[in-house]
Image (cartoon, rainbow, N blue to C red; front, side, top):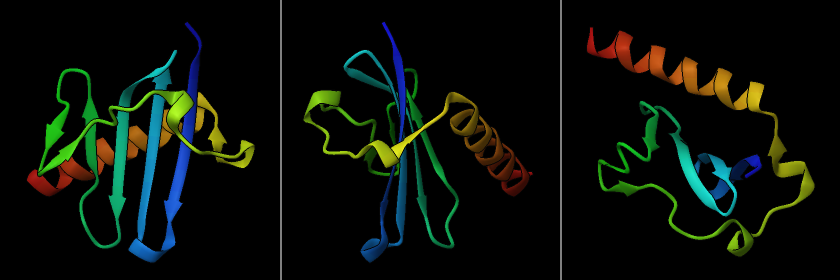
Length: 90
């Protein structure tokens, strides 16, 4: 199974979503809203604060080649979000 990493920005909602797909299925997701702590979802923690891990197939997602990011970029953002959450919770 190949991995693909996608960044989707919804400027009208001040929302950025990062998705990590393995094959057709999302296995990790980062949800960033302006001025809020990020929400991290994965296969072990698929629900948080009324947010759910993306449950559609990759082939159902509309995205452009410019939406594709590297594993390095996704992991760097994921790790920064983990650090922000830990810092907030002490």
